[in-house]
Length: 287
Length: 137
Image 1 (cartoon, rainbow over the protein chains, first blue to last red):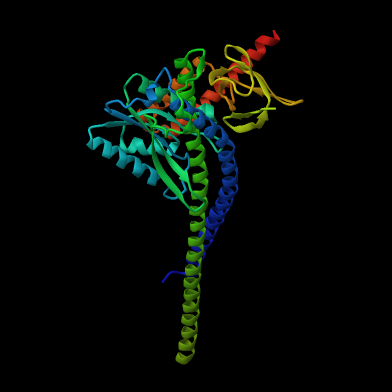
Image 2 (tube, chains in turn brown, orange):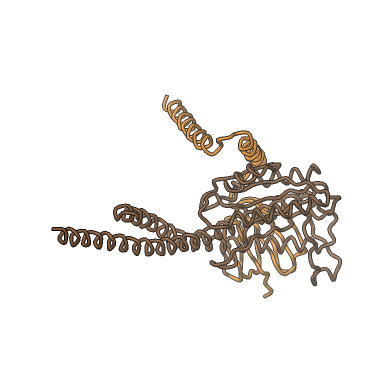
C-alpha cells in the first residue's frame, strides 16, 4: 500500500500542472478574440480581390492566365498551414492525415506530390514522414505578417510557371466555431472555373494599363497570396480555439485525478490509523 | 447626381467604402479621374493619395501600391500594406528554400535554429554598431 507522503506529493504535482493548464486555457481564450478580429479585418480585402478576379474571369479577356489552364497533371504541390506550437489537441494531426490521404489518392493516379510548409509542426511532421519539401516558413507568431509568406508563395508559383508542378492545393484548418475546426484541402491552381454572372451577358473586356499580361500576373499572384494569408490567419484562430479546448479538458482531467488521489489518500491514512489502533489494542491485551 | 461605388481595401483592413461622384487616384501610368460610367479599366495603383469627392464633400486617403479595378458602377482599390520590390521577393524566396533544405539535412534543426538565430541577432547588432561608429567619425 502506498504511503501518505507519496500520495500527497502526487496530488501536489498534479495541482501545479492543473494551474498551468488552466492558465493556458485563459490565455488561449483571450487570444481567440484577437485572432478572430484579425480574420474579420482581412476579410474585405479577400472578398474584394475575389470579386475582381471573378470579373476578370467573366470578361472576354485577350489574355488567358496560366492559373486557369488545366494541364496534364504530373506533379502537385500541397501548401500545408500548421501551427508553430503544440498542445492544441488533434488540430495539426487531423490536417496532416487528410493531406497524406489526398496525396496518396493523387499518387494512385500517377501524380507525385511535394510540399510547401507553413509552421513548425508541419516541418517536423513531414521531416519524420519524409516528403519532398520545396519551401518552409515557420515561427510566424500570433500575428502573422503577410510579408513573411511572400517567399513561400513565390517559390510555389515559380515552380508552377516553370511547369514543375501542375496543381496546387492549400491545406489548413477552417474555423467553424470555437468548438469545431475542420481540416480543409482546397484546390488553388488551376483556379476553379467561376460561375458566369450577369456581367457575361454582354461581350466586354477591360482596358488594361499597362499590359494585360503584367497586370493579371500581378493580380493573380496577389490573389493567391491573399488566400494563403487568410488560411494562415484562420489556422491561427483554430489553433487558439483548439488549444483552449485541449487545456480545458486537461484541467478537468487533472481535477478528476486529484479527486481520485484524495480518496486514495484518505483510504491510506485511515488504514494507517486503524493499523496503529489495532497495534495498541493488541499490545495492551498482551500486557 | 449619379454616383459610383467606391471601396478601398488593404490586405489588413477596409479603409473606405461608400459612394462618390468623382474619384482621383494615381495609376501606374499617371493620374486618373474616375467618374460614374467609366469604361471597365484595370490598372496598377501607384503609392499616393486617393481623393474621393461626394458632392462638396471630399475625403483623401493614402494608398500604397496595388491595383485599381473600374467597372461603370464601381471602383475598387486593392492596396498593399507595404511597399515591395521584386528583389526583396527573390531574397525571401531563397530564404524559405534554404530553411527547408536546412531542416531536411539538420538532425537537431530545432536546437540549431535557435542557436543560429541568436548568432544572427548578434551579428546584426554588431553591424548596426559599426554603422553608428562610422557615422560619428
